Amino acid sequence: MDKIRTIKEKLKQLQIPILLSLTLGLAPFFPEPHILSKLRWIVGGANGMELLDWFDVLLHGPPWIYLFIKTAKVLN
Image 1 (cartoon, rainbow, N blue to C red):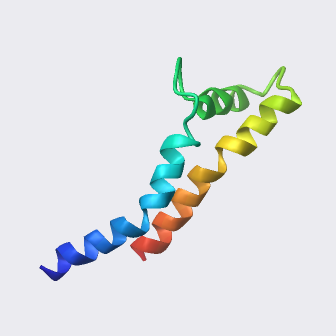
Image 2 (image 1 turned 90 degrees about the vertical axis):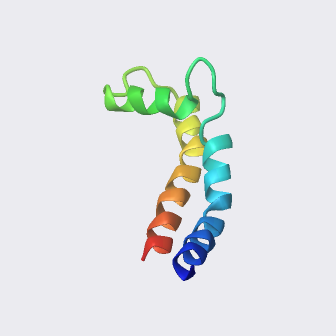
């Protein structure tokens, strides 16, 4: 029973980072999440990326970084 309570407490600590990642981190959702298209572009060499495209990465990336850092802290 304590193990289940501990898991629930850990999940509760991750609610906001998960919410941010699934909303701001993925928006707009169609035709594909914005951050995925920008990351593919960067991995492909970032040819033709303009300042606005880099701003998109800076806008949509931090929720994911926050989620990864918070998850690492919660799991330790």
